[in-house]
Image (cartoon, rainbow, N blue to C red; front, side):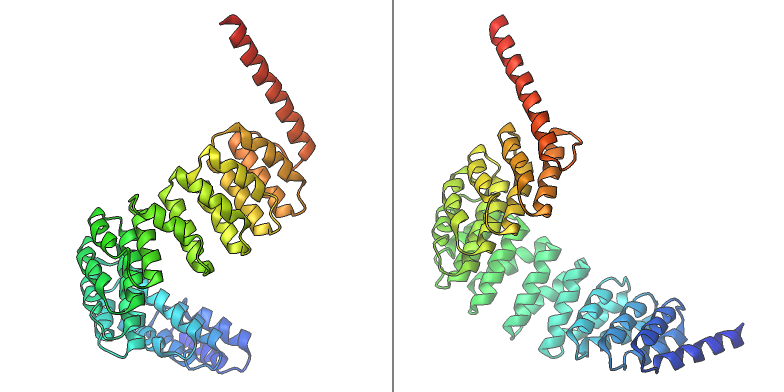
Length: 377
């Protein structure tokens, strides 16, 4: 048995040094199934391969092997020149349930800013309560990028211990840090953040103001409404999109009018997010602009408008959805058919004539029921 394994390892090692990419990747995947110390040694060789795809597969294989040697190699891969390999290492490390990982992460938080940055990302993905304290400490980091990544990680974990430290970050000197902190407080959903956020609604930085309004919208605070409506006129498309998203989250029917103006925006991304926001509001007043957007010149806008229709409990969207079955793009017709099936509970194919015939019969039945009820009343 030992001899057979020795031959197998020797063969795999030979394949790893092959110049053929497919052969190398096959070898790495086979090594990942071995799960022993010799497999770790072979994967260490794979991590020195010139091709990033081989190194990336080696990371995935290491994630299946338990023990400190494999973990050490994964942390070393955070220094790889390929962003793809580093990203895979971050994802893989975050999945490992071993106390040694947390020790390594705490050590990384004292290294150069790139490693600190990656440590933040891993801690966020882990969602481990043990990572909250070091992340809060990282809010004091001298590098604003690290502070922002710590904020992002804390917003994913959503531990209540982070609320007060994040509120303090609203007064940070760095604009991007303040903007990230404001948005994170919205994701936390803690009402204690409303008053501090209101205090920075007039921040000198436009992005901070927009993120603050978005956060207040997530927290359901009405103070955000008029500010967000004003941002819809901003020349920066990203600012307009942020305001549209926030108004959708606020779900205030008063937003339908201002959002209706955005269906003519020259940027399709703005129009796509407008359709999403109108769908979230799901008031009957939002149906006319959505019906217009079904015939937008951009296919993605058409799709989003059709998807938004499923949020309405109103028979008035059936006719426009049936008409959408005549549009040029199959994906739009397919989506319209899916929404129709969902809201009508009818299993009809993507066929305009069949749907039209069914709906005419349904409407005649509804009319008869209405007339009968009035007559016998």
